[in-house]
Length: 193
Ligand code: BEZ
Image 1 (cartoon, rainbow, N blue to C red):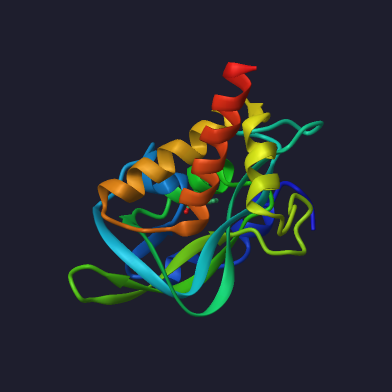
Image 2 (tube, protein in one colour):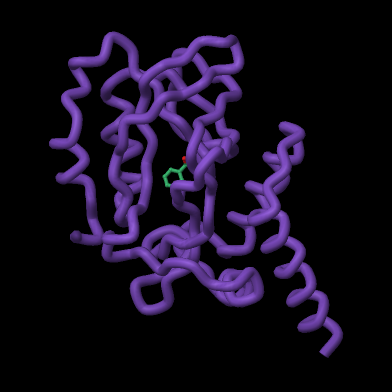
């Protein structure tokens, strides 16, 4: 599959079929909200966990040196915290552009904090996308992130901002917090050497 998924995403769902559209954010959409929304709530989805397994050629890395950003991977009985945004249809033009590096929009059941369950959309970078990097150890992921940067800034700030946002919401995520700890350890070693 191509790196740039904007055209594919346009054809995946007919947004007009939805009375209201919710998008589930599990990464930068939790803390970098650069679009208008009609409603926003804490939320979760089931059966997925977030992982730094997706390459970033356009935000936190470059085509020559891709960074590592989030995608979702299926995990039995998992619960993934995030934020759900009710948006107007045209917002997907912005989101499809922002998340164009291999992510496809998928339909997903979103459990809102008000107790309602809605069918919404989520961006997932699946293993068959051209930007996918896949599984690695926490140490290797942290080292990769510590040395990467791109047009949206240092890759490590993506991790720190997300970890801060999760803590503000009282959420634990050992994958994210483990990588954050390891990056701090790499940075402290490099500042003393
Ligand atoms: C998100 O924050 O939901 C998100 C993460 C990666 C790609 C697209 C969206």
